[in-house]
Length: 444
Picture 1 (cartoon, one colour):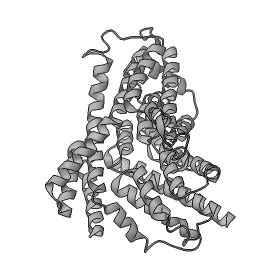
Picture 2 (picture 1 turned 90 degrees about the vertical axis):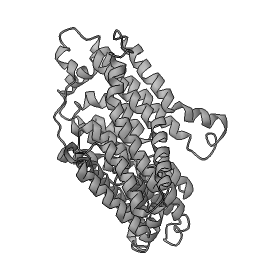
Picture 3 (picture 1 turned 135 degrees about the horizontal axis):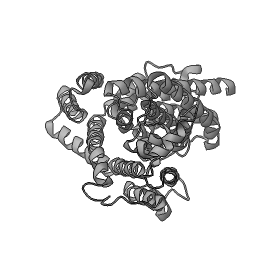
Picture 4 (picture 1 turned 30 degrees about the horizontal axis):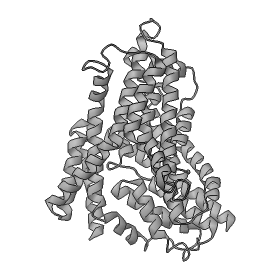
C-alpha cells in the first residue's frame, strides 16, 4: 500500500514539473492541486487534506514567512541606499565570486534552518553574487551541505544525540566532509547555472551622487546579515539536549534569539540605523516597505503551499513505511553498511520534505540497528549519525522551502531547480557518504 502511495507522490511531482514549465501554471496553484491530487490518489478523506494543508501553510507563514519578509525589506533598503550596487561594483573586480558565497553557506548552514538562513542572506547574496542564478544555487547548495554535517545544526544534533555518538569525532569527520561537499556544490553551480549579473535599478546612479552613502550601506548590510546568521546559529544551541541549554529559562532565551518575529524586527531596523538613511515615505504604500511586501507575497504563498503539501504527505506515514521497506534492499554488511542510515534519511526527506523530521525519524530507526550492523563503536555511531545528516539534506524538491527560495532567487523554473538544486544536493550527499565510508575503512 505505502509503495503505491510513494509512487503516486512521485507521479504528482513529475506532473507538477510539467504543468509549471515556462509559467503555464502558477506554482502556488499547482502545489494546491498537487496536495488534493495526492490525497485523491491514496483515497483518504477530503477533511484530511484540508486540515493538514492548512496546518502546514499557517505554520510556515508564522515562521519562515516572517524571515522572507525580513529579507525582502532588507533588500529594498540595501537597494535604496546603494549598498547592493556598491557590492556589485566591488565584486566586478573579483576573479571568483563563489568562494565568499560558499563560505557564507558553510557558516550559515550551522543555523537552525537552511531556508531561514538563505532568506536573511539573500540581500547580501544579491550584492556579492551579482544576483545571478549561479550565486543563488551556490549559496543554496552550500547551506544544504553544511546543515547536514556540521554541529550545531539541528539535523546533526538530533542524529548525534539519538545515536549517542561522539561530538568530537563528529567535528573531526564532518568538517572536511562538509568542506568537500560545499566545494562540489560550487563547482556544480558553475557548470549548471549562469553567472550573468542582474544589476539593481540603482546601479546606474551609484556614481551620480543620488544614492545615500552606498559604501556605508554596504558595510551595514554585511554586518546586519552576519548578526542575523549568528542569532540563527545561537538558536541552534537550544536544540542541545543537555545542560546548560537543555532546559529551563536559558534554553527558552536562546531559542527566542532566533525567533522569526525578532529577526524581522531587528534586521531592517539595524540596517536603517547603521546605513543612517531613510527614504521619505519608506513605510508607506509607495515606499520600500510596500515594494518589499509586494515582491515577497508570491513567494510567501508558494512556500506556505509547499509546507501544506509536505504536511499532507508527512501525516500519511508514507515516508517512514518506505524507509522500512528499503531496509531489505540496502547492504547490511561490509564497507557499504553506511548506506543504511543514509538511505533511510534520504527516502524520508524526499517524500515528506523536512530534513529535521528525516533526521529524527531515521536516527530513531537506527538505534536498534547500529550494533547488528557493526557500527556500535564510537566511530561507527558517529559515522552513522553523519550519514543520517547527509541523507537528510539529499534531494530537496517541491515540498521543501529551500527549493522555492533558490527557485525564486535564481529565477529558475521548478523543473530547472529540480535539475540543479536537487541533483546537486544528491551529488553532495553521495560525496559525503563516500568520505564517511572511506573513514570507516581507514579506522575499522
